[in-house]
Length: 392
Length: 222
Image (cartoon, rainbow over all chains, first blue to last red):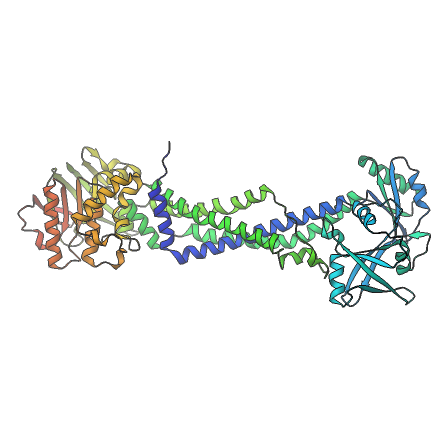
């Protein structure tokens, strides 16, 4: 059985403490680099998870009418025709749109709900069970982000929409809803479908789009194709298309993170290069003395291994722990904004805990073994020089 | 016990080759106290370095305790030193930022000794050289004489058969030098083989010295 030489480990720890300031500096730099890299990985993993959940909650197909290349209102009679296609589980016309709130400079997503229609999302289904949108009372249910922005602008209990004809429409805030992902619900205002028609000034036989759910997910592409054949003036978007478009936006923003990532790695390797290409004269002398006292080259390398492992592993653990706190507890202030974009509503968005063991492994192999090699290599070079030459 | 056969040691610089030792032949028996006498740069320290296998001869053969140390690989040289040699360096070569105790045990660390054995050896050498009360003091805070005693204690921790001392009194006043000589006498009584390189006259007339070897320009003067 291999007996661990505790005296060697103790010597390594003393060695670290002997050069407190130098090692503290290395510890801080390494920790900071691991912290930045792991924060980037955690944020991207978390946002990817959030986007996946959002994309999975989308309807299978969205049908939009296009006119002169622009999206226009679609005739609601088309719903019945679409329902006749084999394999279509349900089809619902949607009335929704963006309402620009000038005071805060942001857009709310106003969604019309028909109490008696099949809801195309589970979240809407559960809301219609709690709140009856067929009531005569004018009310709305808002996402938490909307609620916050309205309160900041002194709309505590109601909000006045300005209709296209210039008239005000006053709606009471009845409730605030949360969703499994805040990306989905944060900026949303739910109103009755009639109210949505009124706010946007739409024709009663028109809708914003039609959402279609399909019984067999494998048939989505086929049914989308059939709808396109049936209505050549439409744009038929499947949830796969939306996922791809999310991924594109995400990848674009990941590019900015990638730059940060490359800068961090570059700094790390500069430090590593500097460390591996030189050894101070006092460090060389110490190695010479130890060899003169009977230490073998492998004893010296073992001691240097312990020394560098202790520093780099503690930095690794600290960097990871700090980034977990930064990303998941503090919600990544500053860095998150790069992903979340312009909206004042977005700060309410919370990063979901997502981890991938590959991330931990990648960060480990990018830091600990590289640092250890950079320490051991110059020590090895110093330990193979004639001892007499070093200590005289 | 220590045999040098036709030893030549040369150092190469960018422009020239310097011969530090030229055709040195030595035969030192177990338990002898030998003084290597000569001016600075005469080659005394090089002889000690070769005996400790800190460097290799350019040609010739060194045999110590029946081992041809001039042929040993780097790692075996280290092991040989660790098991057989106690070296007292001219500038002590202590690690200045660690304690007296930690400096003294340095030669034993690679052997991963058991605690009982280590403490026993530590107590013996610290008592022998009267530094028990300094065991937890950082070495750089000690006086020159105290540092030298730490260096001697360190050279004795592995209980070596051969003790090599390079200009051991160069940094000491006369009182401390005489104290060192007394220590050497005690070590000789313990049947240690001791080789001291020095040009300090205090060593030349000692009655317990077995042999004095004069060296000049890398050659032994008969």
